[in-house]
Image (cartoon, rainbow, N blue to C red; front, side, top):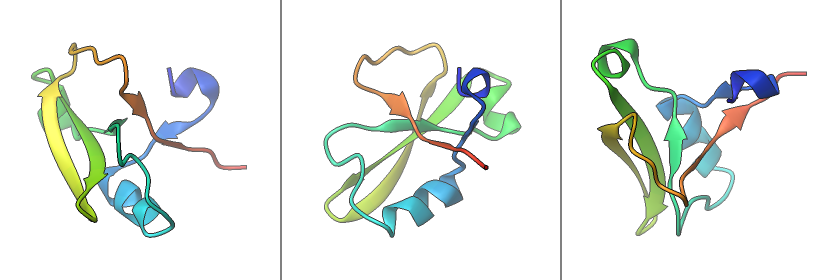
Length: 76
């Protein structure tokens, strides 16, 4: 979906940099780009900010969470 919008999912490192600009995902979490070694067997990564700390989690890529969006970057 991100590619269809002309953007790319943030990597874990980019997500951590984003969090230096403000407090994002304090009540929700967001999917981020997942390395192929995790993605190929069906895994996916997501992140959030809790207790003034950025956490990274994993789940099956087919998991559906209505409140979880994704973070992307757009280069112009």
